[in-house]
Image (cartoon, rainbow, N blue to C red; front, top):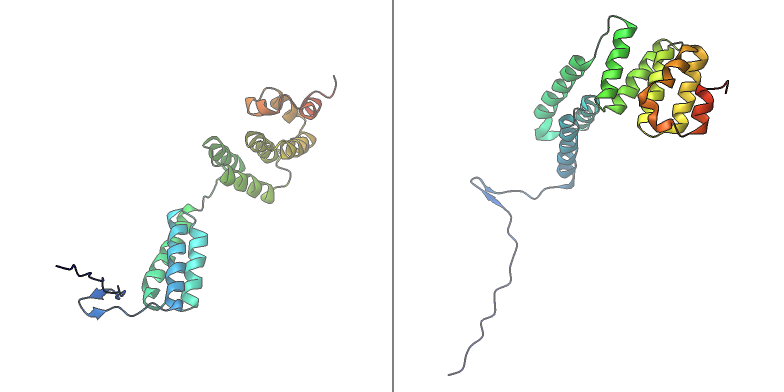
Length: 186
């Protein structure tokens, strides 16, 4: 007896089915809206509330379709989180202490932002320049460290004495420019 070969039928891709019937094919505009929505959600999950709020608002302005209500809700949640996250300080010392705590916790970008806010409010805040110098030392940016420390010492010569015993500058100890800055009389 001769064997017959069976040829498999060609596979056709079917659209997914729901109880209501088949789903309509996604159009390009809807795919873009979903992508924007997902990107905004990721920003929100990363606690970047300002950026997430802007992304949701951009999405709403462009017409968010069926995601409008969710986008509006998340946008408002971002506003609440942003308002809650705004720290208010009773004094400059309190603001500086907060910036140093961020630095000590390893939140370098947030600490940099706080030190810069202090300087924006008071350009004569030598302690903020000193903090930026420490931050730069800890992140390996010797050029910025020297610039900030030089200015901090120029504004307040006592910063030179403090820097001599500050262990946060240990990575700078081998740099001759750093030594010359701290011990100019030698």
